[in-house]
Length: 289
View 1 (spheres, rainbow, N blue to C red):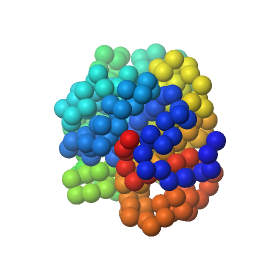
View 2: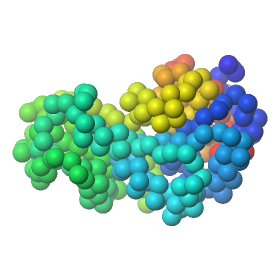
View 3: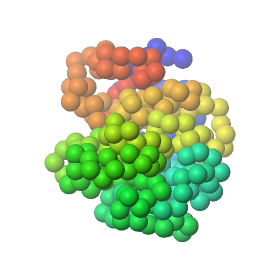
View 4: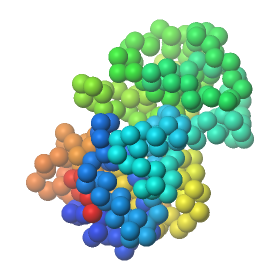
């Protein structure tokens, strides 16, 4: 395997190293407004090269909603093989109740989502409550920009944490792109709940369940022939390394302040990663062939 954090100019340089690709969504394929033209071209060339592609996202929304959004942004569903979100893994877990943290979280749910989206619990046998004092568990799937600051939730969370109400966080991302730039994402709010003493279970990258589900969707393939592409050391790279996958970090994403424009991108990436558990195999400014 290649030395850690080697800079490449395009995926074609390493195309013989992998058969399957897991593609992050935000910051990798699009910026929330449109799919990056170079990323769109790269996806088409990956398919033409016979690579299998699954979009792997920490979105707290269901997979179908994300596929529809991608199509609106310029990447039709026919361009890739599958899509898996942490919201989809969470929904499936709550439906099946087959493994922790879903087996005994109860049914009275205090739901936090972006834009009051209810798809995360659609078709599930749950009772929605509007007060954390009535909740068996808190389900955190998304955040509106204006409610992203953890201090806004402190009192409600303090009361819930005192009762040891479990939280399931369906989007572990720490930061997200808002209208004014980077703002706290659901993962940061979940960490704040932990700091208050509340128990939290995370679903999504970098945690094992979403990667295991992605490998299953690919057909239980050899992990060493799978490339994870994303813009987060903490989520995309760390999760991939823990599962034995290869990884490519894109600099012009959540780490752009530190990495974008670095004269030696590979060296800057190695310095930022700081440990083997967060070290990508390769790095490049943005997705391209």
